[in-house]
Length: 139
Image 1 (cartoon, rainbow, N blue to C red):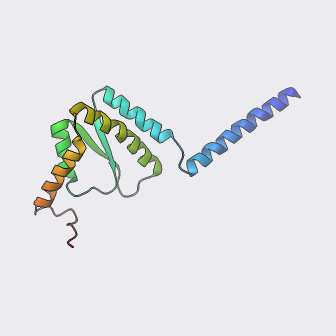
Image 2 (cartoon, rainbow, N blue to C red; image 1 turned 30 degrees about the horizontal axis):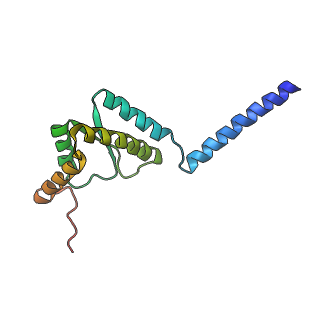
Image 3 (spheres, helix red, strand yellow; image 1 turned 180 degrees about the vertical axis):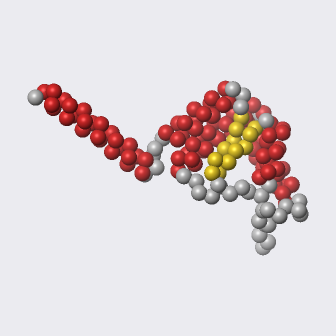
């Protein structure tokens, strides 16, 4: 009888844990993509490989931004998703970028990403032959 009660309590505990994980995932508190993003970023940084992950539609001047990061700072820019971004993809990319951005900025002693973005925007809005991007809204 004691074995049956013990087996029942173990199975009940496992079922409760699975239900908790399911609820956790449904309501957005699932930490595994974030944990994986942190670990992947730390692994890449330890090997000297700097990557920035992006999602959503590319912004105007994204090609120039990517080129600046790659040529000046040896930082690779990758899109993980475009228009439709799942919660796990967003959590992974955000966690990865948090670690990666801090490491790159620490290495170069300045905000590399802000500087590169501002320069890419200057280029993007001064280049009339850029036809793939949406023009700025005029007020």
